[in-house]
View 1 (tube, rainbow, N blue to C red):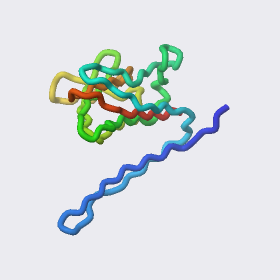
View 2 (cartoon, rainbow, N blue to C red):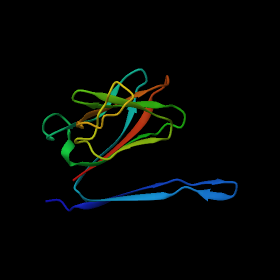
View 3 (spheres, helix red, strand yellow):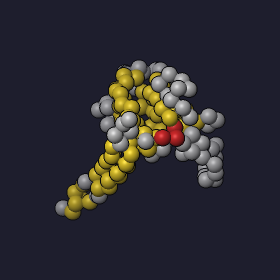
View 4 (cartoon, rainbow, N blue to C red):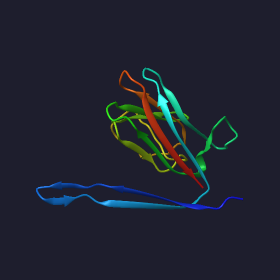
Length: 152
């Protein structure tokens, strides 16, 4: 019997241009959080490191996170100089994104959340589950990557 918690995340942009402050602050509150997954992984260069796996059940594979229960995923590149690529894999497709040094990639869910296509015209079709997240540093040195996942 776990107590449910509230996850609060805040993203703030702030820049002053010609004396004028620009940017905003947005806060997301997610209730009923009962589980978190958090770790810092040293991802070797010239290798692909799986940093999280997702499935319909936590018992489907070692360390699996229940995809249907995910409400927040953040992957942060902790390096101050080296970029990484994140691979977001589904059962039948995937997409990759560059995460420059010091930046993060946020995904709200893992269930019915992704669609990859091999053209430049989005179809907004049926969305698939995320099955795993992978990281590959683009530089010739290892990079520390932080992952945080919250589930209901």
